[in-house]
Structures are given as structure tokens and as C-alpha cells.
Image 1: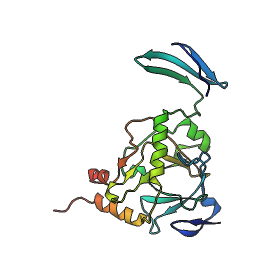
Image 2: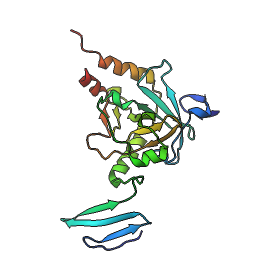
Image 3: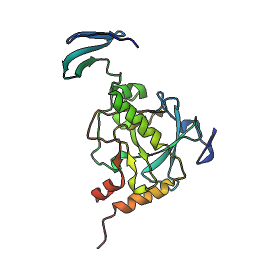
Image 4: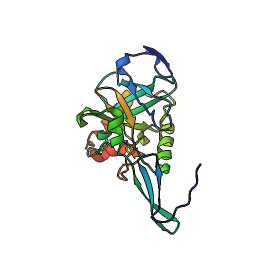
Amino acid sequence: MKTETRFFGELEYGESEVLYFPAGIFGFEDCKNFIPIDNPEGGGVFKWLQSADRPELAFVVMNPFFVMADYEFDIPESVVKTLQLEKPEDALVLAVVKIPDNLNKMTVNLRAPIVINTTNNRAMQTVLEDDRYNLKHPVVSSMQDAG
Amino acid sequence: MLILTRKQDESIVIGEDIIIKVVGVEDGRVKLGISAPKDVSIHRHEVYEAIQQENREAVVNREISIKDLDILIQNKKKPKQG
């Protein structure tokens, strides 16, 4: 399959790669299909989520455990049901990164993680009712704290 | 929008299985008790709006190399020299 994209030109992808968000993501409820694109060199913490529906819509996401080693939450029942999750280990968690001009000030939204069922590629952004997790958690300074 | 008046300890029912009860009213604050099926997500509206806004601001609007981002944080993670 192919789609036009703003940053990746004409992007070819396999149907099995597409993440399906039945509810879209917050603020983009009509965008239900995203293509994950990894660092071409592999092994990275960041990846792209490119909308398969809108060429200009792309997000950078990251592994939240990289900025907070003890990040944890109970997967809400609404997510379990929507994703048809059978086991916690089938879930992959990503968090949306906001990248200002100064890269050192990028933040990651730990309050609203994206959960993906890796067995069927269904995905959902959820809201955690947990004040420990910030919508704008600094990425770079947490690296320094982690030493 | 449907507007109803309720007093303390009164409730409303939405559909078959969602009940919202006014548990307390004090100093302009209303405390609600909500009972709903586990698969229904319930959020404070302002949190929901803040997350929509955060996502809108996170849309990438220029060329960014995620390889550079990976390098940036890997370098930050290294212990300081000297």
C-alpha cells in the first residue's frame, strides 16, 4: 500500500504494519490509521507515527520507560476491551513527544500514553487519572537525572 | 443540552447502566459519584481538553530526524566527563 506524506514522500507500507486506533487520538478523532516508522538505524527510543489518512499529520513518539524507569499504570478496562487485550505482555506503550525549536526542551506526555496490542495492532490513547504523570514531562533533563 | 435540577443525594441515570449521584454540594463545588461499567472512560473535561491541545501542539511541523533525537538523549545519558 502507498500513501502520500509530508515528510516521507510517497510511503510504501504493508497492511499488517498499520496501527488501527478505533477512536482516533485525542484532538484527531477522525484519524484512525497510523504507520509506525522506526529510526532507520534501528534500536532507537523514538519513532514516528505517520497518519495513513492525512499526509501532513505525523507525530514523534517514544518509549516512556526511557524517561521514567518506574513508569507504570493499570491498563484501564476501556483500553483492554477496545484493544481486545488478553495479556499485559501483549501491550506496547508509547508516549507522544512535543518538539519545540530548542530540542533540549522537548517534552513527553506521560499522562496520555498510547497503548498498542501487538497481537492485532489495535491501538488507543488513554488518559491516566494519576497526578504523578505530567502532560509535559521534560525529556532531556530526565536523562541527566538518570545519569 | 438537557438541564436538570438535582439536590444532594439525588441522581440521574444515563442509558441503562450509568448513574451519576450528587454526593455533596459545598462552597460552589459539587461532588459527584459516578457508577458506570468498567469499559466506559470517565475524565474531567479540562484534562481531556488539555490532552487534545497537547496533541495538536505535538504535530510535527518541520523536518526532524529521529536519529538526531536518539543521539541527543544518548549523549545526555552519558555520565559527565572529568
